[in-house]
Length: 454
Ligand SMILES: [Zn+2]
Image 1 (cartoon, helix red, strand yellow):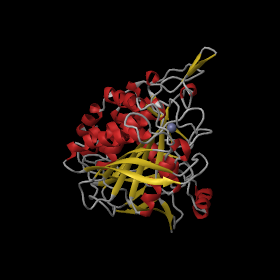
Image 2 (spheres, protein in one colour):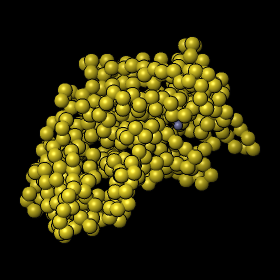
Image 3 (cartoon, helix red, strand yellow):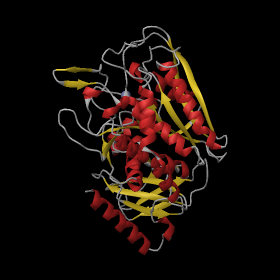
Image 4 (spheres, helix red, strand yellow):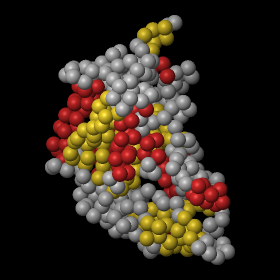
């Protein structure tokens, strides 16, 4: 299926070239600079970070904060210091800070507790580009009793794996420059109710951050299924909402009338992650899952969705629930516990490389087109789209109009244009369309699903 999809894709590009309206530079080929960064992502570093995080014994939000060796205080100080070490290679462009707040007594917090997220911000080099990209893992851990702050709570896969991923990307990307800003996060209190991520999401909203995408990595290190014994180190799931989590009644009415329930901004980001990730990482299938998260579970992308931002969750293909949230023990011959020896570090490396390619391609690309509209004033078998150049950052070299069958999961055709309008000989009633900006090197923005315009 993947092969035929790609064949179709290559054929489309060739046809477009023959049509002569497209210059050779719009052939999609991997960017050597991104490929170099992807190659630098190291399984060894990821392993060292995960083992170090586990060495703090517990990173539970209610654990000790005064010891230098154990507990969440020691863990977050180490994460911050390590990020600062990476930032030293950034010529002052990367700054590292705690994002601190006091969480009042609440469901899984028995007394007011100070929570500290670690944010490493790699400032964009274009002062006229306000875009912000976020990548995140949660560094807090838990065992069976979610209120137990004193146990041995290694949290190697959940979620030292996502934390190590975010940190490894900070290490590799700190040495490079991007026009847009990238923030590498290690957040806390996910296990107690997503409080750390919620604090950043609300702050981003209040301070008007121009967040273009948030990538949440949670449980990205195990490559076999518990009772099914499935082994799969070449698939990763990306969860995205279909109907936007914060959709208004008016937006819901438009979805009912016209479709588009498979084209939320987060679903477009999920498709983008598949296309870009598979362009740069061998032997990795990015599997779109058409739901916001798994049954009985939530994650740090949810507070961002609630604030109206575009966000997805990456998680391993098959899970071993005996190695999540478990006291370390053997019971009826079964081993329990989220220990580093059960993390597949080469697999985390692949997922990290995919995340890096997505972040780099987005941060190097021009911003999304603005006010994308599909003209609906006439009954016609053609489709006319209009949009405006992005209001922030560099000017795009051109735009791709994307098209697919209404029943297709992925974009099937790309039409390259340099104008801010396009008329296609395909009916808007029969296909879905979107528009994305592209620069001369082929870096694409996220696609925008157009709104009907009369
Ligand atoms: Zn988790």
